[in-house]
Length: 264
Image 1 (cartoon, rainbow, N blue to C red):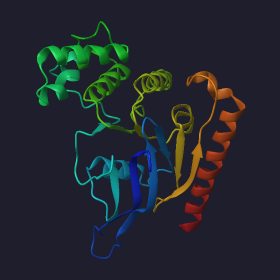
Image 2 (cartoon, helix red, strand yellow; image 1 turned 90 degrees about the vertical axis):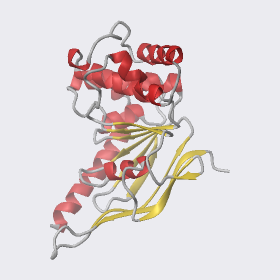
Image 3 (tube, helix red, strand yellow; image 1 turned 135 degrees about the vertical axis):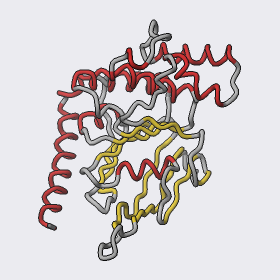
Image 4 (cartoon, rainbow, N blue to C red; image 1 turned 90 degrees about the horizontal axis):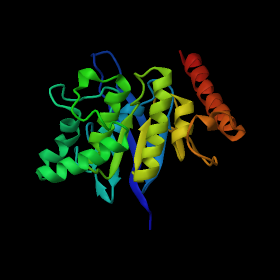
């Protein structure tokens, strides 16, 4: 029996033509992937390959043309509380404090005030925001805002966390800090995570498995298991096994870009 939390089977997505003389655009073709319970899976690929479209279909925000998505054996047809989504934009409520933002999903579920406060504090502490509970979003840095967004999503205890380039808007130094934070949070919570990025270093540092996509129409070109000893932090960036995986992925993506140029 499969232990997969998420299964994507033969997924295809075609967007209709926007103008009379234009052709429909096939964004995804024959996508198959699995994410096991408590696994951190990353998808990388060239710009425009359909990574975000795939994540939106898993999240129930878009419908596939054909194929299906299953979470815990149930087919996805619409958004649901079993999936938590974190985007590049923070999507925080500016009129609510850090604590109130983290509590928001729990309040919508009807969780008692005392339980909301307890849970919110647990995740505020987890993402390193103790002392900022009463601060408002406009008083926080970009990295801190994203910590709030992650804490809010985790507090709702979704079955799977879907993350679409959540650190893409951050400066390089803050991005590394957030990568290490997420790696630590993932280790402590054992959440199931599907993560989209264009950053190869980020993919290898965070993921236990990487799906490399081709150019449009997006297909799964290769699946790479990541087995690097030691903590998932910046120190692994210079390890030989890290560099070997990075070189392999870079060569695949370079070839995709070359093939795309020849097609024009």
